[in-house]
Image: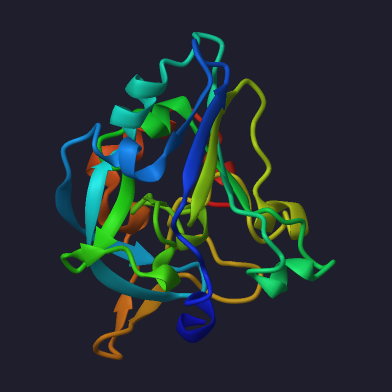
Length: 227
């Protein structure tokens, strides 16, 4: 995919911010990034397919973008959408997938300190195969929740349905929090293969970030939270 991803055109790139906000707007990516101090965070990344890696992301907290957007009190979720350009990305011509790619989080998840808007990795601007120029990183969730190449951010009242959830809801749900005790329908999630070493290691609840995020789900139906 790294080779195919080089066809991605990342300039000009605009991000539309709308839905339940005080003032909908469309802003160029470079102008958006200038509005926030950038920082680097070393995060674990756990794929739903039971592999993992550790990545030094650069970017800014999602909650800073939420504050910038000024959502209305009626907003309950943040819905993210990626680009749609079948000429540039021929795979989007496939009828098997409901393009464009969509994902979502609750407002509480978006306000958590760990939720991170990514603009770079490994001290460089974000590579095209990593989801340039703007992607999400939610380190306590399975990787498919961290949408790439974002062009639209809407604040909404209804729970968004992500692309993978739309295709196969019994395997890929809205919450997707990492839990070693809840198996994927086709494989165990109890352990993971670390890509840079090949080592098989035990998977941690919430990918090791439980102290920071477990309170987001207090009192909720535990059976729902890991799909």
